[in-house]
Length: 196
Image (tube, rainbow, N blue to C red; front, top):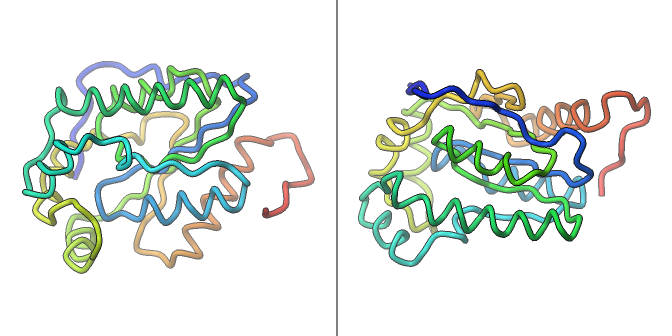
């Protein structure tokens, strides 16, 4: 299902940072945007969607079913990093829906310097393909699913990543994500923050 990164990963963000970044990653159709929006509402964080940072040329290419190359993704990742640097300066917590297919791109976001946690929405190709085939209102062509799985470098050896199986209900996925995030952000707190 996954490819392995060929270069070592540091996986470190800034554990002492006061500003948080919650990344919801996965291939197209895994439910990133839905979960990111619900996490943002729960924690009172700003919600960002990686799709909004793509150029119009990149969106048109994906709409034709043509996958982006790593070189084509670089300006997109750079644009997101610039926005996150502004969030860091402003002390603004964020939840980001971001495909995160490549290890280097995940690391670039960590290197911005926020306290970063990553929720990986994981599903088999058949499940994801069925979802995308029945999805409306998104620019990405359903033919991109195979290339997304081919590009995905497995994040499971990265210490700030938590895997959630997408075959569960949205409520179960949300609960698992919230519980894990709270244990990571507030490991010594007996009282957990209330829902916004």
